[in-house]
Image 1 (cartoon, one colour):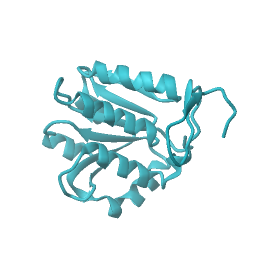
Image 2: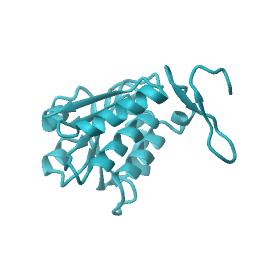
Image 3: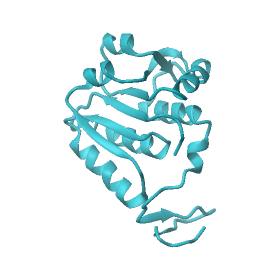
Image 4: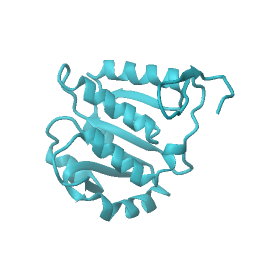
Length: 182
């Protein structure tokens, strides 16, 4: 989608049964709004399957991984790390600097699932708050990605889509992806 280095989203923590839907939505939001891949904790296999299924049906490229090494993923990341948290610097104050850094460096965006340990705050290059108020981590991720990409992600063309949604004023229209319809 973009010519810059990779953008990956790391879902930090997953409580099976409690976080299933939210973890899945972190992955779907990452995919839809311009990230290249999502990394889930190894106990989020159902979320991985769902995001891979959506990618197969509605297009990619987008990768989904599982890891048992969340802290090591952050620590060993070869690039910059953004931790989305309500306690961070205001998104509107730091996104320009992050965007400039991302022109050269891969970007890892950490999205918490349960209480995030202080070590994550220390490891991050930026702790970023979207409103500094309690709300959904999915909403925070969406706002951050939209600001990072300046809205360009909304114009993305999807490759290898089995299905495409045709925008229209009312109703729902989904067609086979190989049709040449606008």
